[in-house]
Image (cartoon, rainbow, N blue to C red):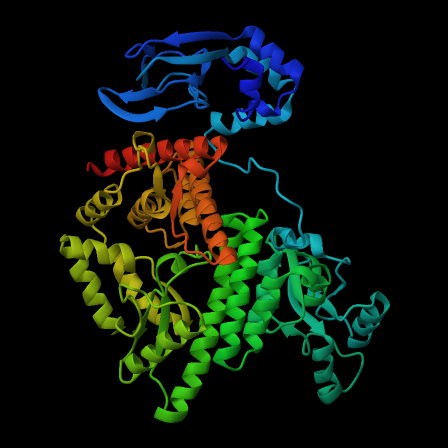
Length: 590
C-alpha cells in the first residue's frame, strides 16, 4: 500500500501542503476498508469527515438509483454538511477519512489550501488556477485605470479664449463643459475650434455655441475594451469618463493604444475591420481574429471576459459585410427597402466564442429584393469565415415582414407541438445588429404580449428534457459540454426571463436580473452563474486548441484526459444544473 503522505501529494488540493501540514492531516486521519455492498455513509447523515478513495469504487445513490461512481483519488463529502446521497462500496474499497476540523486547522496555515475548499463550500467555480500576466489583461481593466490626467473643465459661459488657454496650459486636446454639479453637458475639442475660426467674431464669446453637445460618456468601471469600442463605433477622439454622472477624466484612443496595441492582435483586427474595403481582406482579418482569441483563451482569459469583446468584434465584422454587400447590391439593383438584420443563438446572446455558425434573419417593412440580398450576405459571411448554418436558420430563408413575423410568433405560442417549441427556443433570442431597430421593437413588443402560462410550461418542459450526465456510470466517460451542460442552463434561464418580461438576451445578464427581482435566490443564481462560466471556459479551451492545432475537437470532453481538480469541478457543476432543473420543474410543475 502506498504510504499515505505520498498518496496525498498526488491528490489535489493536498499537493498544496508542505510536509509538516501533511503530517498533521495523517496524524488525525484514519483508514477504513469497506466490503462490497457496505454503506460508507447514509443520505441526510451529518458529515464530520471527508473521504478520499485510495482503492476500489464507491457508488452514490439517490434512493435505489445509482447516479454516480467515485474512483481512486476522488473526494467524497467535500462540500456537504449533510449528505445528499447514500454512498455504498461497489467492491472492496479503502478510504482515508480526514476530520473536517483538522482541515480547518490547516486553513489557518495555508491560504491556498483554504481557498480551494471555500470554492466548493459555496459551489462557486471561480478561477482556481493562477492566470498568467499578459498585456491583454488590460482589455478587462476598468477604463479609469487608463486616465492619464485630471479632467480640464469649464462652464458653458466661459469665454472661448479662456477655454483655449486652459487647454494649452494643460497640454490637452479637449475641455469638458460642465454644469454646477460637474456633470458634462458638452465638450470643446480642436475640431470644434475650427467652427469658431470660421464663424466666431470675438474671443470673449462663450464656448456654448461652439461646443459639441450631448458628449459621449462612459462610467469609470466599464472595461477598457468597451470604451475602445465606443471610439470605433462613433468615430470620436475623446471619451468622457464619469462616476455617478460626474466627470472624472477624458480618455483618447492614443491613451489606450499606448498601453495596449503593441501586443493586442484582437484590438488590431477590430480596427482593420472598420478600414477594410473588400471581402478578401475581411477573410484574412477573421482568420487572424480567431487565432488571437484562441491565444487569449489558452493564456488564461475567461469566457465572461472574452465573450463580450468577441461579440463586439463579430458585430463589426457582420456590419462591414452587410455594408459592402448593400453598396454593391444597390449599385446594381436599386435602393433596398427598410430592414433590420438580426442575430440569433449565441451571437444574439453575446456569448459567441471562437467557432460559431451563422444564425441570422431579417425583419422588414416589405420584402421586395431583400431575400436575394440576404442570400448574397449569407454567402459572403461564409466566404470570410463564418460558416452557413446547417439547419438553414439564415436570413436567406428567414426574411419576413413585420406582420409575417408577428403571425409566426402567434402560431408558435398557440401551438404546443415540438416544432413550434423548437422554433421559440431559437427565435426568442433574436437581437438587432444592423438597420432599423424600430422594426425589431415592433415585433417583440407584440411577442411579450403573447407569453402565456401554458406556453411557458411547454418551454420549461423542453428546457429540462436534456439532463446532466451521470458520467461516472460509463467507461468511455465522454461529455458533450454544449448539449448536456450549457444548453440546459441557457434554455431554462430564457423561460424564467420571458415570464417576467426581462428583455436582456445575455444569459449572465438574465440571471443577474432574475436574482435582483427575487425569482432566483442569491445562492442558486451565483451557483448557476459560476457553473455556466466554468462550462463555457472548458468549451472555449477546446475550441482554442482546435484553432491552434488544426484538428477538429468539437464540444465533447473526455474525462480521462482531465486532471482530478477539473473533473471534480465538472461533477459539482452537473449537481448544480440538476438542482436548477429541479427548481424549474417545481416552478412550472413539469
